[in-house]
Length: 341
Image (cartoon, rainbow, N blue to C red; front, side, top):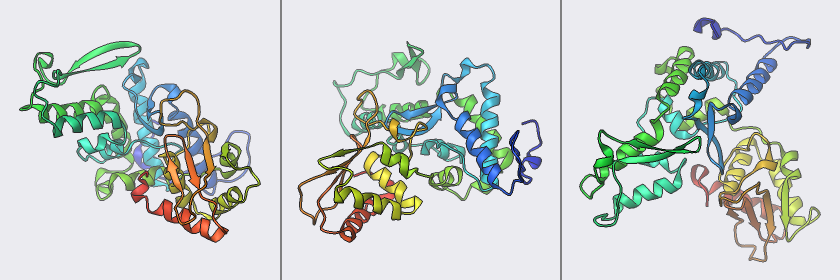
């Protein structure tokens, strides 16, 4: 990646070793997909999943174990920029707050909800309640790093400053800043520098974080055969009418609606790198929790209901395919902006 940025904006021509054929775009697209699949893999330590039930990525604070990690983040930033510039997508997506930071937009407490809902609830509780005589916190936080618990001060001498009703807003603000920036400032700046070398900041400024996410990852291709092969059935069988109609509906959906359906049922529009067999629930249970179709004894006037903790969708015994399609579509589309019921 020692090439000049302007050269990386030229048309991509990729040829795999040992393979014949001209690149009319498809080979470059596959190359970016395969490259990003590897460079974003949490196994290599540059990135980590934001939480077990969500397969979006965030910068790993411990990436510094690799002395060359900053050059790798710069490389990743350039690859992301190349993908955007050439109209291709990468395999894997980041948290919305990270996209927001790449755009130079300020981070707020609301951004915490998507990456650490428990911490978000705790901080909201602090703001909305009188903590006098209840909270015994100081302006410092603890973080696990390679099995060792480390204490970090949110401000100078923070360990000696108690959190009170008068200063709790400052505490929450500093905590949010620490959560998104502590230990990753250098990595983030290297990533951002690589991106901006290919796509100047003024060209990205009109977009918000959700639009940037779509430019980077697209909506994602969902492998229906893999989905079917790793789906659990409850109170129904592969030959049950409701199951056949469900898959018929899925096959009729475009990529966006399939992603919305997956978001509705699992809480994430993304599939882990290992495929549907590696879907995790959000209950903290060890091991995978497969996508589940559950036929329930309920009124067919009801919409299908999702249980994101269990990756399960409850479907009443609709009288015909048209009604199932209508109800399923309505349930999925009524979730606002991929929100989860």
